[in-house]
Image (tube, rainbow, N blue to C red; front, side):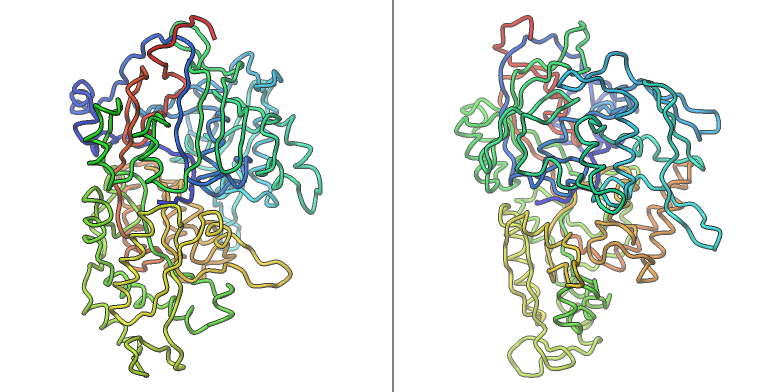
Length: 608
């Protein structure tokens, strides 16, 4: 499913509980039963070789800090490291650019010491100045970034309300940065796991146009010479062919080394091909053109039958942390609202959204679209998230009679006998349902939903469009007073994490990804104000049990109000060719989360 990124993936302590047995080594299952997960020991690899994967859609930008879509962030996220990182297998926090922080006894002060001798891929030193520059960029309201919302703290404004403020930070010396929180902050490690930006490459663009504007948003756009970019991750980009491929080569200054003190990665190159859809990925794997890919659920059995012949292995990693949903545009300042205010007011009626939810046959979608490899979804958390998921939420299950009753209660009638309902003013109740054309799962889901909605009298036109075009409609802000947000209904997905606060820019009424009505100065609806308050309470609650109750309340409100009408949670399936060592599958990290540790079994070099 086309996905809008919330934050880089954060992993839960219950990852293996949702896994299929085929993906979990016996020792891991034994350790999990004891409440402990131990990463298999890596083997020493040889240098050389290439791994090739596939992605859907070309990046809109190579600037990670302003990217808002999966195509862009996937293209560059591996180029930039953070202070600390979470091991996708053990789910423990580990040193990265910095050692683990020193935390004060009261939990308010966090001090990070950068490792000695860090360098960017061009040999320039990576220092505390880069960390401070990154924070300045993220907290600059002129920078269009998804990172800012999740890194702002709500503090009392002295007037009975709240104001959003950055976490306090300062440089102690060229290798040391200190952060101070105004109160103990439960998701502090997640907040402080932001990717560090290269000051020497991007500061001039950020300063250009200040104090009223900044050129940072245009820096490293899709027309950039990728060879001029720098990296602190395992790779540098050495080739970009629009619509065709990205080629990554080893970063000679990468900070991570193996257990024997040798600099990683082992592989020489990582190649990412662009494809229009999942069917292309399946064929590419079977034809030997790629080495690793996520697998569409309805291709699972086909690929399993071909494992031996194709020299690859398919892993079912269990329920994913991704979601698929239908959403209506509730924004009264949008282009659709200007064109048809009565329609958007109908979208704002919770009875209408609940009726639509009743009309969606989720079990049919699971069966016919996902081949049984998904679960019906009714709320914002995946059942894989054992820390915060609750099944005890309102569920508007498939019931066409109940859907028709809710629509009748609103006063909607078929006034002209054409089989479709009319708005009170007599105009047809007609809207367009969009989804991204690249993914067959999205299109098949939309086809079923559109057919179901016609059964209850909604005249729905389904129109698949390009993912980048779709995303541009979601974040197309008004200019010179012109209306924006040009969409009525969409089917999309969010990538998820186990930390609810990572989705703050979706659920907070002021969030830029508060898709149905973003960037509100004050909550437009009482239930949005309730969610805002729950999010504020959730970050301050250090007791895990009480924190769980807070986010259970949030799930119940979302399920009742249906701003996003969830459809299914797909299972996570991936395949990799049998030519690599140190493959360690995880439900949330996938197959190449430790790509710097993977090695070609036929590689022979002892040195990079």
